[in-house]
Image 1 (cartoon, rainbow, N blue to C red):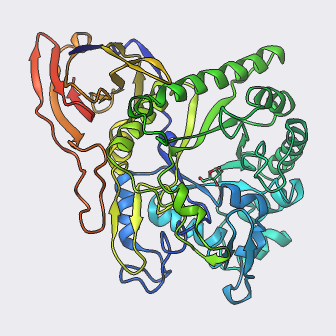
Image 2 (image 1 turned 45 degrees about the vertical axis):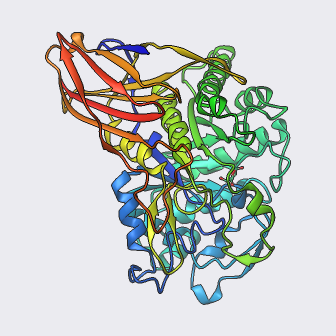
Length: 499
Ligand code: AHR
């Protein structure tokens, strides 16, 4: 089996916004309590943040973390999470049927972001609340001082404003499961008014309008076009969310899931451009793919979780080798669409459908999906190249013909490197892949890292945290600017060249 990738530094897609390597922490399950925060844990710092978890996050280099939800935000009172802890209310949390203690809120999260080397991406509640609370939250968070709300933040111990730049106008407002869910027209009006007020308080912020919760929503497409028609002048991004799963054991289709993600992105880009055209607009609406991942392993276990617990172990998918391949191809899809996808958040970061798992009082470890995420974030900065890929195909029930080779490529002029992220999603055969780098002059391989396991169901656990981990790949041969490598069946590969 043979495949080809041809690259040229003049064939570019666009500059990669580092924020496409963002992630997400929701007040859900053990993401916050037991995930990032566990006072009393041996690794906890003076503020109760787990330093073992922080170290794993810093290694990925996550530029932005969305917070506090998710479905959670649609019933959240941000005021509950600020001020003296002893006075913070315990609440029924209706999105996930849990108890929220409010021990962590906006200020602590911003402290944590500094420690994690990341920036907050804050969501406002447009479900049970509306523009007025959103306005107040921006003032509390971002206004320097001298007003009641900014002085309240200062009285809470935060003299300097948090200066949060990126804000989500609600979450999945098209979903009937969402507290305060809306029709597109209802949401469009609310989002527009919230956006106006928020930008009146701080004109430097960027705003993300809610797109559809997934392409299966009956309103998909109409929702985006209605919402953008109403909010075009005030918003900067439209959100996309998607989760894939292998519920019926159709591995070939599951491994091809990113084909759906590519098509999803293209559809939303078309709607953004249609809106710009009919408005004779001057700006492109960019995409914020602010929830994406594999999510299905924990579905059955979650239906048995008892209501009204604090931080129950929900959505704790144990990711296997196959999931890492799908995540790798999803990262490739984001890179291939770097001209329009400017923000993306792997959902989520710790314990809840996450690359990092913890035990309460115990260790933290990397799941399989941690590795492609870390490597794409570390090596995927620069200019996304338009890779011309020729690949053998396999047949799948859901997507028909699927190219076995899925690839993206990044050129970083500063470090003079070309990085190719290549997934051989063929489960039967290794793929001899020729990467044509002639347009770059002299090219030398500096890294070949391969994530591969003979068993697609292999996972990492607390006892065996490195069962699935990247190994040095075999490299290959360079002949007159064409590098040829053998990519094992079902493998994620990073090939990095100095050019
Ligand atoms: O990430 C888990 C949940 O998935 C989020 O709360 C919601 O926005 C989505 O449906």
